[in-house]
Length: 337
Image (tube, rainbow, N blue to C red):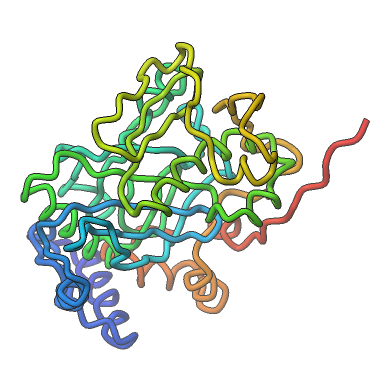
């Protein structure tokens, strides 16, 4: 191992020890690390095993990733919430290669998507673009959740975060889970948050995402996901046949969200929300280039980018666009004539 990398690794490990983190990260057999003992204990207390299926949810505005696992009841329960160190772009969907947008939508991680040889410690490919996005002409590839604190369209969870998440996914896949559902939202989709963003050009797209969000919130089971009419459609019951023609017509009674019922009083006569997004349009919560969880923001403010890089990456991967990460998002004023 080169001397510079060795020294960076030692600094990183020391920072974990002094901060109270006791998990020592593997560098050679990193993909084979066991599930940390504290997570094993948490699973046991919640009636889960390492073999039980996993589901992942991410929230951009809050910069959080949730890992859920199925418990003895057959429903999913929250195992742990991880702070996201860095994501890039704005609130809104990813539509093209190189736009620096981190995606929003419903995705599936297949076993081959787990990457033990990542340049960012460990990673998994979320599966962007999905079938709907491909039909709409969206482009991009290799969109990952990975370690370190650097993003140009991905979600960075730090090396330590990935050392915890990766074995959870690996063990579920080894036990037979064929794909892991990943749900990515611009924010936690409460009615208050939806109303706050009602004027955003992405609001119809977000109402569509909220259908799937509501389904999981109510059932605690991964929704079945299909597509028609340029949007997602969802069902909570197994065996339900969903349309899977992204640009084809939708059958009557396609899924609606709780928010749409509350806001409009009736499901009748509503226009189907489209996925068309404009992530930087006026009225959006504007970012300079993405954001990070407040925990990491405080470290960046107080100790600087170099120190944050040491604390989040064994190989000292630089924090991407640190000044942009410190930018406080604001509600942009609407354009006037």
